[in-house]
Image (tube, rainbow over all chains, first blue to last red; front, side, top):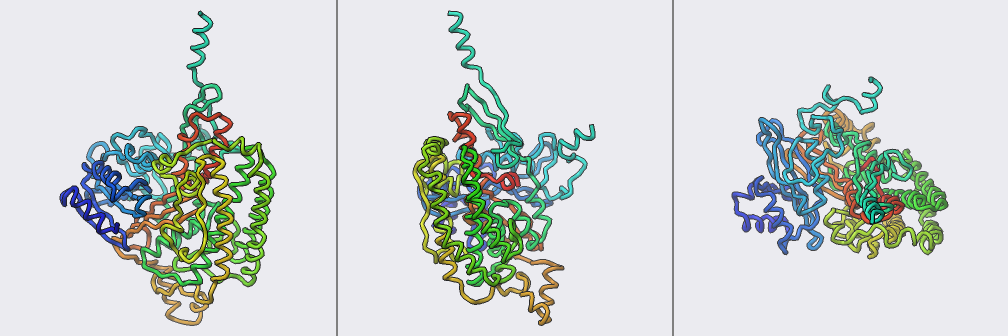
Length: 170
Length: 399
């Protein structure tokens, strides 16, 4: 199925108020899905026989600072049966208190587990319902989100050196 | 009665042991906590991040052309595959058409790096299960490939040869002849490795039926490359979604149905032979022509033109000073078949000279997630065989 047909299929199943923006660039389409419906849309994408997106390539984040809503969560999908790909996104707002949240898709695609853990620690997005929401690549004692655009490449005083350096300093 | 009760109590007591982060068979700095019942592995909890260098953040602070050497350091075992993946993604974003000669040269580099990576995998994997000999044979041929890289690119481990729009320089004189003599001999070398392992009773006992990853689990956990193909999934991106002219090559997808460590071994052995076939065809397909696309403002002009033509000098200067300006709001996900599977690069552009967002879909990272599933119920000694069958490169896992 081509990109336009997949989008049409989604719109006819969920309506234009859930499937909002669709951007086509270099023969690849990305549609934006209302955040609260992400699990429903993903379930449909996986189980609908004409779509059958059984493989999740990755889950990632994009920080659109200072735009609002601030974060995009990107899902790149592939169907083994139909050999087609598709990309969906959901916008997550930065909260005044606590972290922005979005439903976890681990129950649909177990591979999402590590991708979501990485996105959570890098951007400060909480994936609700994630079975194992620990940090993945970063030290537990870091409370910064390195892939946010307002985080400097060289780090801040909140990113102490590696544990070895701490031990050396006593 | 009392004795039986004590015995039962002992039975439910599990033991936690630590593997890594520095261990000869973890292929890098990888740590796992194993929960054991006697010798049986109940659960595996991997701890990653020891090699995390902030690759994506660094790339977002560099211009598109500056990302290429970084990309190669992401997976130093298949370096050319990585710069290849980044360059095809950037070319898709910037709408650059690569000339045929450059495409063929890129395929040569990609397939050489696939053999290069599989050879090192084979050597270390055999070593992990107790066979010391294959490593020395594998390193012998790996040295030949490094010499080929050095001849044409200068670098041995990291050729840093592929560029946006083509390759940095034309093939060095004598490269094709040496590549041909390598390909002529290589099938015989694979036969040599196979005599050491394929029908070796000890090796088969150590690997057959070990580390089962069913087809359903492989798809659910996102496994790709040899991991998926050893579970009966005939999926190779070079065939299903060809890039860089792979549709013109005649080769077979290596598929096995055993879902175990031994099948992964067979798949990689077959892939080396298929890569060799592709290399032979690539030599035949190598036609004269430019080695880089002509697209001022996106692709560097040829070095000799910079000295002789003022327009080329200006283009070169502007590219270095200002960088490229890809379309604002453009975003692409482009993927290739790396030695480890689907290696993808998701690029988001804000119209500036640096990628606004670069997400690296590292196959080793995704494949490693299958480790816990495969190890549950296995013996502790099999865990090492299973881990090495994933073919992880920790630099790519942690990025």
